[in-house]
Length: 284
Image (cartoon, rainbow, N blue to C red):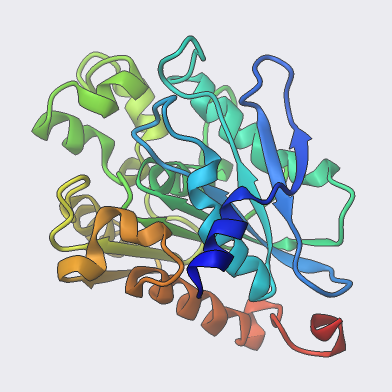
């Protein structure tokens, strides 16, 4: 991909929507591929330590690549920690759930039976959490989802919150959850992806072995727990620069190629229920 195309993907606005009125961060943008559809959907969830300094803009490069490959992409924003947004527990979770559910209200040619959740770093945590919403207690943030995803992808995800907190007390996990797992065990039971395995859908984890921002242990721990519980999980580890933390949101990276191959393999499988980029509609 040329640098010019990547820059255009980042700066070009798309169709924007609001899914709430409590804060300007309650918004999302829809990127549509060529053709009439209905299009399978990837929901993208950005990372950045759940902090207000990072936005959905960081996903625009991979979002553009997905749209060119035949997916509709729902790139969401949510209330985060800091700058008076009020994010963290529970509002970050409330927003992510509401943003995903808002797809039911979008007037566009979307196949809502074919929704994949994809997140990077802190967004990887949120993607795995959102993929397990159907199993949440009825009074939990995000319970009773309006649609059911078919797969989840965590790129360098923070997939085991409690262990991460104990290895690095406080920090970003503490900001998100408002305290430790010993102080708030009920919160971690709902919000920690590793506590909610197995998911009733396939999961892809992609992580660098030398990631110094989010340790590969986060994905190794989740993969082991999910497999032990009978879940369908695939962990791909990347060495050296190929697994750098920010390489996952570079559409020219080896880390991103793992994701697109996995998606396209599922899209070409009749058991997955759809095919992407095939037929006359894709060429219009």
